Image 1 (cartoon, helix red, strand yellow):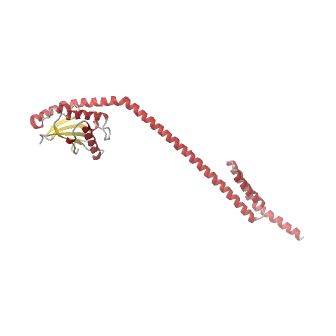
Image 2: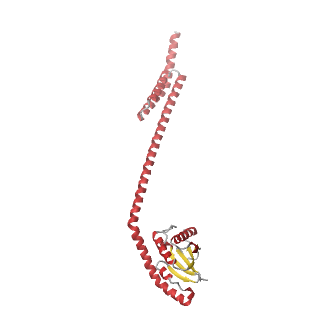
Image 3: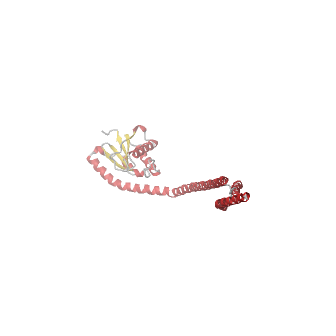
Length: 282
């Protein structure tokens, strides 16, 4: 009789344990199936998960062991999720690196194409545009020349000491010339020598300075002061431009001993000027 009672108690206990653990086992099986549907699970990882699930079923009548088995299964599932997360990140990183490399290659290709197009455009338009621009300036200077000759002649009649020297007329083709008590002022628009806010001479500006230097070398100036009016770029830009002009004149044969930099304050904005001081000037 006692054996029958004991067997009955064991059966009832097992039934109660199964009722408590069955939902967890069913949930674990569903999680495993869902993970397999998402992507193949490596064999070693899959074997570990199946073993943990088998132990849960085997020990479901023993709550303490079942809890250990369930935790092992949960830990293995968490490990699988972490592995997949890292693989996803690696894949995304690889895609980003490929995209960056592709964009870099495309950027270099566009830069090369842009450079080629600029060279082609420059080759087609540079000489024509520069010649037209220089021709327009020459025509403007010729128009101003007539006005300047009248003004200089009037000044020469009133103040003989301020009469323009012989070489001044030749300079008026390239610049505006004004004779004064302190010397001969040879003024040019800075835009005719430099492009934009650059401090390097443009091709047309270099040609203009070469022509001016050829005439100045025939003069008897004891000093040639280089002045550039301050501009939106600031005093620093004006100083660098003045240094560039001085260096170009030196290369064109103007003796270094007569060349000097002077302040550009007082000049009309956007103007570059050479002041030729004669030895006889007061």
